[in-house]
Structures are given as structure tokens and as C-alpha cells.
Image: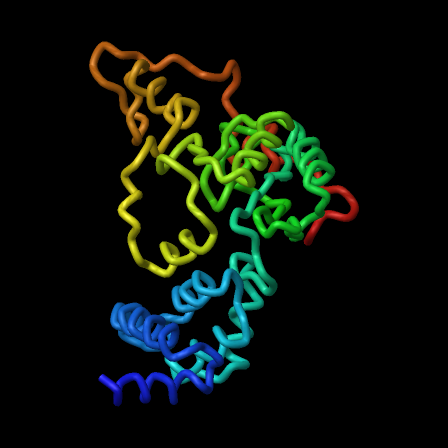
Length: 267
């Protein structure tokens, strides 16, 4: 046992982690690496692993990943600085991402972000002094049918308003359990979620609904109308047109390909 501790301590010296932390991370790293036929393919989940330890990608984490995967620290850094889910400075316990893409913006996303920014006293990619909240503008949360959408550690908070979003951050800062619109029964911490993204299940994947009413409205309509994927219909269920006019096929009169070329068009 003493020899193992000494071995871990020696290996840890190069990364900056203490021997106990290094041994724990190394065990998890080997599990991640075992999932891939090529060692370096494990880099993305490995970065999530060290982020679950430190709350961001530290020099220690980069050195650890490089050592475990036989890469250079430059190779690891190149990947870590490319993806926005890898943080380059300490992240809050909860990342609040406000969608300000087109649909969410016109439905109130910009107003929500401005309200939260003023309420929390921070701007984009900044963290409150208590370390609880990191605020981000997000280009798209992929929840357009529930616009405006806010995400808390990548869990959906649908149909938000400035008031509901403010209540959300206040509850999280107060340590209250907050249930997202869809998904698990409560929003977990940033470190917790980072470990899940590293590929370690927390057993919460089947909690809560996966889709809301707006997301399945099209499926309901198709069943009511008897529509199928290939355009065929069930017996005695005639298709009723959804639109008054049908868009022309490419090249037909009135299609975009049929319009006269104008100066400035791409050749």
C-alpha cells in the first residue's frame, strides 16, 4: 500500500495534483481510455473529467490529459481552447445560458439577458462574486418551440420571462433545488454535469419528460390526419393541405432558381 501511495505521489508531482486526487483521476481516466480503440480519441471526455475536478481547464488538467494520452500539452490546449464548453477560468456552480438567437431574441431573450446581467452585476462569461452563477449569451439552445429558453447547466428552462429567470438564479444562489422544465428532477452542479459529460452516468437520464407538449404537436397532428413519413396516408384518412399554396419545385415558375439573375449574385 505504501509503495502505491509513493508511486501516485511521484506521478502526481508532474501534474500539480496531490497523490490522492491524481490516483482517483487516473483510475477514471483509464476507464475512459478503455472505451476507445485509439488512445487520443479519449481527449474530449478526459477534458470534461478534469473540469469536473477543477470547474475549468487548469494547467494541471492539461498536463494530466497530455500524460495519460501520450499527447503534448500544446495538443491538449489546442482542443481545450476550441470548444466553448471547456472553460478557461473558474466557472460558477451554475452556468446560466440565455438564448439570444433570432427567435428567442425577438420573444424576449435579449430582455432576459439584460435583466439578469443587471440583477447579478455581471456580463457575458462572467461569474458572480459568490461563485454561484456564470452568465452566458448562448447562440442557440435548440429549444425554439419553447422560446425564449434559458439553460441552467444545460437543463432546459422553457418559456422564460425576465421575472422567472431572475427567480431561477435567486433560487440557485440560495441553495434551493430547482426543477427544470424537462429532464431530471433537479438541476445539478456544473462539476456534477461535467462528470456526466465525461461519460460517468449519474442515473438521472430517465427522470422527467424528454419532450414537452410543443415538441410533439406535429406528431399529434400527423396521427390525427393519418400522415406517414413517405407521404402515404392510412385508409379513410385523406390528407388535408396545411398551406393554401404549395411551394414550387426547383426550376418551376416562381421558384428561387427561376428568378432572373441580379447584379451581385454569386456566379
